Length: 115
Length: 117
Image 1: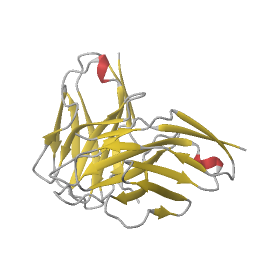
Image 2: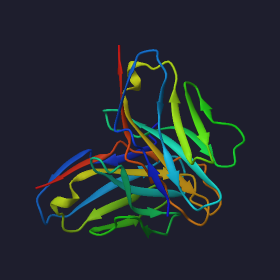
Image 3: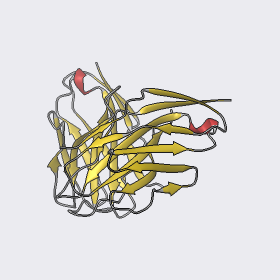
């Protein structure tokens, strides 16, 4: 079974600062994928970034980057130069590659960006 | 750029009523999913359809049924609604749910806010 843990219920950051949202995972799969989604107050789920367990480099996507530490089983999302529009819930999720495995989500972290 | 379209966006039901939530995607995706989102619990998978013609139970299937009508459409039915089914329901789709392939993100609809009194 897979499990995602997001230990930060809420995070605060000032505009233009960087922020790290934590995500740890547990899986027995030798290969797997990790995803981050953003859910603004309007409710939709927006895919942000993907990291494969065998990717040689940490994933980056614009202001988003993933600090992937495989030995620690962590996949933290780093948002650089925070903007007011980054205020939202952020969900970490993973999927194992063995068999027909589904996406498992964490409970989310609420990020508030202040001016 | 419709992506995944869910209808309705809001609904209030009385206990015991039935209802079908509709979902359609225009991305030619093979796999579709239904989730529910409750406060403090993230998203939990109700049912999924790996490909047209197949459906399987997810983590919390009790009280729900699904139909994969065609490649585009995947509906979720509550036969006899209960207050415990008050939630936000999300439909999602992805290119394919295959063994050994896992990098396709799921694309989500805007959700249906369902209240059962």
